[in-house]
Amino acid sequence: MILLSVVNINKSMPEFIPVLSKEEIDRSIDDLASRISDDYQGRDLVLIGILKGAFIFMADLLRRLYVPARVDFLRVSSYGSGTSSGKIRLTKELETDINGSDVLIVEDIVDTGLTLKYLIDYLKAFHPGSVKVCSLINKHENRKKNVKIDYFCHDIEEGFLVGYGLDYNENYRNLPDIYHLKI
Ligand code: 5GP
Image (cartoon, rainbow, N blue to C red; front, side):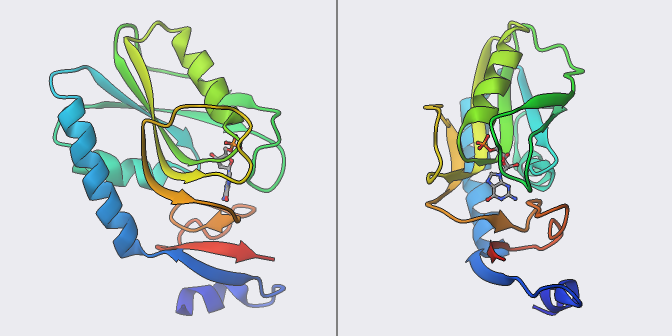
């Protein structure tokens, strides 16, 4: 709360409605990491984090896995203040050989599903053994593509979320909890 009031100084005082606490996020990542570790025993796992929103989730998930995993990142850009408009462009390419490997895309939020569809198609061209998807949040209100999310931590119906890596115009990524931001 102290942090939020500092952030709000001299701005138009947006409203922050708590959605997920740090403790809830931690618990769900614990569960997810053990499921993923069980499922990927003896496999050649590569986690591919999607910048920038997933960087904190990716770091917390990776540290809880008890199977070996290589790591890479992709970065996509889309118009607007955080949500995808459908015009997706890759701004950081893959740097790891994933031929025959078991790829797990690590996303912050799946909203319309357009970014995920684009990323799956992009990664399949490198002939991985498998491509699955893990997202911190599965948000339903704007879904346009019927993409399969193999693992997710939280189902959220609607709202624009910030905190725990999620931004609004590059602000609020440092908040430990997740909030619904009302401007
Ligand atoms: P999609 O292509 O599924 O519509 O959206 C993908 C990206 O839009 C997410 O990875 C995330 O970067 C951004 N996004 C979607 N919903 C939200 C939200 O509620 N808050 C923030 N900060 N970003 C969002």
